[in-house]
Image 1: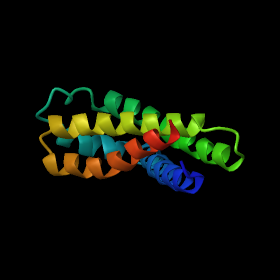
Image 2: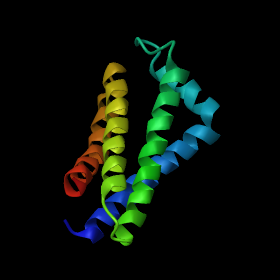
Image 3: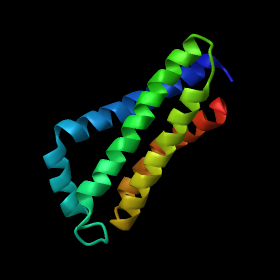
Image 4: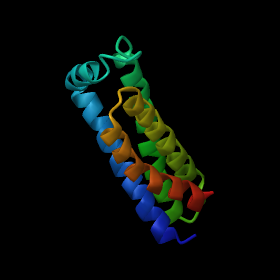
Length: 127
């Protein structure tokens, strides 16, 4: 598949997940407070900080691997990092989709699909 398209897709994923990770790290308390309210009527209500921490780790892995994947593509040394960055991006989005569906936030779940489609395309292209 075309390296330029793959690089652009990985840039999209890297920016998305590194920015999201940054926001979670530097605005942790705000995120936990909002999510506790968001999940107040779900099975996750008492696990919000732990669930958010797990999501943060997966997002950072996705973002870092996607960024390294760009470098790997630019140096023509392979596609592995980009592929795994896209896979971890999909895992992260599925985690968020699960949470949104659990909270019955169907608009939020629908929004995640907008991010999921390019992530799956990246998995396909880089496989």
